[in-house]
Structure formats: structure tokens, C-alpha cells
Image (cartoon, rainbow, N blue to C red; front, side, top):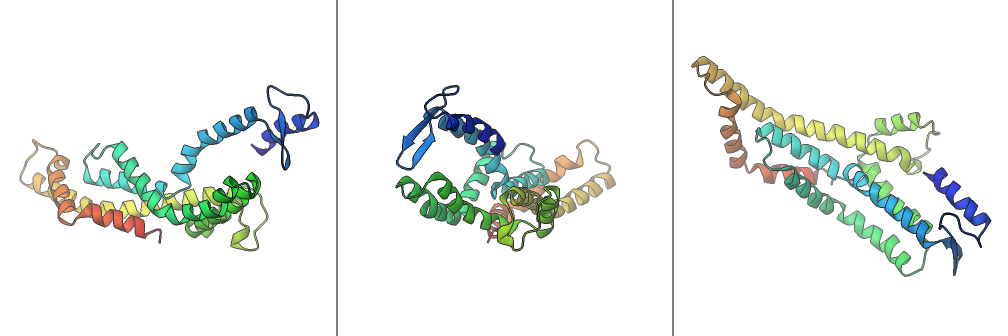
Length: 240
């Protein structure tokens, strides 16, 4: 991506009085900057990447995977619906990211909006809390894997780990954590399925599949222990 942007920008900088495919350089207080067409192209490119970043580089990943595991364990098929689970995961992600978002606004967005810093300086400031958050939950083994795959030199300290290796390491670590939580959630409902299957087979009841018979018992158990409160509370606390 950086090489592509470099190839697009360099010819324009070489001829500031000309235009290339409608991309021109305009002068501002700090010198020359990209023209409006190029800024719009870059903004639209970033917006297309935003859903992928939201789904993978935030707590949304762990939360939505665990919620889908929970729905499968309950055997309720499409209840709650995908829209409900995604919405719940999004709200919980906002709660977890609230301290990071506040720090980003104060350190990066407000100075940029007031014209005190440039866009590159704003990104440098914003990358610090993002790097710190990702580093908290990325496993050392996963970071080492992506550092090796990228053929990058070993960092001298955790703060020197590049985001290009830290972000996929975070995704891999979150997937592992989410699968571990999902396996634990499956266990009590698996016990109910085994008991119901044993009972139905012993009495010769073959008219209904054991899964259909055990579904009400699993839902009843989940409601009696206030399962939603326990699961959501444990998920949010796992990020503290």
C-alpha cells in the first residue's frame, strides 16, 4: 500500500503545477499537500478497510466468536439472530475500548482538529495507545511467529514490535482465547446432551431426536443460572 501511494504521489510532486488524473497538489501553511481528489480516494480506501479492522483488531473478535459458540452450545440454531449478536458484541467492544478511545481523542484527534499537529503526527500519537492495547493481549509466541514470517529483526523491547506484526498476532491470540472460552461453555451443555441421549435410548424413545429433547433443559439451565449476565460479565472482565 505504501509503495502504491508513493508511486501515485511522487509524479505529482515532481510537477506541482500540473495534474495527473485529476490529482493535484495544493499549497497550505505547511507547504504542499494532496489535493481534494486524492484525499477522497485515500479516505474511501480507508473506509473500505474499516469493517475488517473493526472485526479483527478490537475486542469485537473475541466477543462475537464466544457468543456464536454459546448459541451453538444452547442448540437454539438462529436465536438470537446474527444481527443481535453482532450488535451486542459491538456495544461491549465500545465499553472495553472506551479508555483507549478517550486517550486517542485527547492526544490525537483534538490537536489535529485544532491545527496544532499534522496528520502524520496525529497518527504517531494515535499508534501509541493502539500499540499498547494490542500488546496486552497478543501472546509472545504469536508475535514471534509473525516477526519470523515478516523477516523483521527481533525487537529489543515490546514497545519496538511493529504494528504490522502485532496486529495479526493479536488476531491469532484472540481466536485462541475465544476458542478456549467456547470449549468451556460447551461442557455443561454437552453433559446434558449425553444424559438425555442415554435416557431416551434406554427407554426406547426414538420418535424425537435427543437434541430436540435436551434443548428445553439446556435453555432452562441457562436461564436459572442467569447465563447472559455471567457470560457477558466474564467476557468484559477478561479484558481488564
